Amino acid sequence: MKVVVSSDRTVRLEERDIPKIKDHYVLIKTKYSAISPGTELSQIETSDGRKVCLGYSAMGEAVEVGEGVDRIAKGDYVACYGAPYVQHAEYLLVPKTLCCKVPDHVDPKAAALGGLGAIAIHALRTANLQFGEWALVAGLGILGQLIAQIAHASLYRVIPYDVSEARAESFRQTAGIPAFTTLRDLERTIERETKGYGVDAVLLCAGGKHSSLTGDSLNWVRDKGKVVIVGDIEPVFPRERMFAKEAEILISRAGGFRPLTGEEGAGVLPSERDVQLAEILQQLKDAEYGRWLPPEHEEDPERAATAAEIGFIGGNRVKIILEGSRNDGRRMLSLDEIRERLEMNSRTGDDLLAIEEEVSEEGLAYLLESGNPLYFSLPFLLDHWDAVQKNKREARRHFYYDPLLAPVYPKLREHLPGKNGVLRARRISKGRERKYPIADLVFLEELFGPVRDLHMKSGREDAPVSHHILAFAAGEGTMGHYEWTAAPYLKENFEFEFSFEGGVICWNSENADPFLDLTIPGDGRDSRQGPGQTGTPVIRLTQTDFPEGNWAGRILENARPLSEKTAASIERFRHFWMKGEKG
Image (cartoon, rainbow, N blue to C red; front, side, top):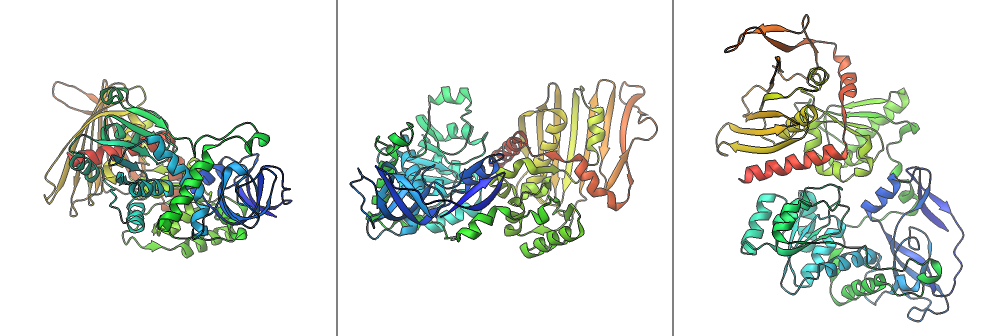
């Protein structure tokens, strides 16, 4: 029989013997198995030096039934759930406690999602909500969508939330339930619908390890309410908010209790998983819940086994620079064009591909899943942050740089370590997208240390010129003042001045050209007269042109790894900016 396995971050088909039937087990010929993207991509990423079978939820026909199995007969359609027994394989040998007969009239494809449904039901049972109570579901991946729909069908009052408009819209169309994508709309809805008390439970279904959602959930939940961790989020909560709300923090174990006593006990000891599985199948029978299914994507085993191999052109990694913002026309590069360029790189042996254009959604998904190192300009990264976050298994191959500030970065790093003082920075941009100030805050945090105590004042939203002023602290002793002015007729620019004991460091990008080298004339110091000062040393970072061909090397040299810490900073600054706009 064929089995889909992952080893050393590659996916392939393997031939194995069909398992032999034994007591308390059912041998199932698989009809459909469900892909759980987050779990399986994580397994692929961590398969270095070992072999992993993928999958955990499936359905098929019982072809043999062992002694001691009394609720399933040969020829029955059976849904099953739970690794290592359930996987993407032609035949499955599953304990009777991890499979259930599929009721008549239930769509086999829906039954294959029974394992995910069991996880969703267990999460709601962990929340222990009562009729008419409010549940906020944060994160609308497949699991979050299932939880929100089951909660809605159970007559709980549901508020779905996801930062991705695409996922929220998919959910609205599938479920017919309003979903929110901005903190402003979400928090206004919570305030209005709960009369200011807050929701009874928040179910965190997003991934991302360290996430701002943990702190936010304590703002959304009522006094003595519950927060249930369902997704891959670290349980790090601000103690002050937990204390103020006396909130209850719970973690939902996937599908509930299952015996851990080895194969002999797996078929006979009680398990919560078959209870949850039976419940979801009954729900599918009693109501038309086939709408739970997302748009269908069916793969034959050969294609499924090679799906993770895209992008390994000629077996070589290609460094890919994604600029996006360099091209004024913003031409969209299609998936086919990206493939053609990668194939050309393969033929020429070039290990660097620079993409100056914008890329299509499917083209970006292809690159993110390709396994190649990606170098994002910060504006491009922030434009596509949701898509990048969905592909965290490749995060260690992701790097970022600021096309405006990358040239000055090594010079600033040379002069700034160990210095505390007063920072003034100003960004002028044509566009009003918040990616500009977020990019600058990430950059400033890299230079000075953690940015904290942010306070923002903004001009009128309907003014022809958008103006925002931020005050903040950074590192161990730096006070910061940041201004962002945006209007389509302004000349883009970034100014930087840092005053410290013994001198001043200045930088002005003038025309925002990313292809500029930076030199310090002479010994890098001149004199500038200030009030009450004589001969204050000034390090003025100036610019000279250098050949266009060097820009890629400069980017690769100065790009920074997109670490979990940086990702958390980006999430924090995005959240702050949305909260600031709300205020």
